[in-house]
Length: 254
Image (cartoon, rainbow, N blue to C red; front, top):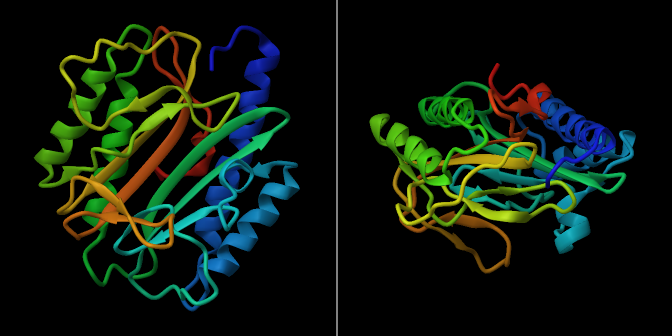
């Protein structure tokens, strides 16, 4: 979305605060022994308290208010009363919503309780890479250069990137132009970030896989070669200098 007036920026700030605080509170609310359905319903109630509407549910008829992916699930996990959170689980929560005609998106992976299965280094790599990448974004920077940063930093940490999941434009709808802000460099891609636009930047960092494939449920994505995937995401406003992180209050970097 291109921000052309103050009221549009205000709208983006309001919806971004809604999704950011919902994500932050859901991460805090998550407990061992809780079902992902219970966690999702809590998230839905928080969104409602802001007057916001779940974006995946409204746009795609997704069977939940938020996407909650656990362990081998890479993204788009369906909340379920039968999926019970356990100590050491790798959990990803992705929250997106619409409020007063504006849309925003954010997400984050974390380890629940003690890090029994040594997932924390993957989590740390994902969120640190996102921070590095966002810090380099400003008007005129090529998408390919940011993709190169993400993939290079992943490799330095001993990881891979998921190549068919990407950041995207956001604002007047959940997904809008630009559609694919990739986690790797495509040398032929000359597209550049534009000042005063809002985009969702995501990292998808993996232990083994490079492609996400859909399960038979029609939603859940897993890695094509197994392993684990972490995701971290912020909605930002591109400027001539350091971006404005509209979803900063989600706390994924704390």
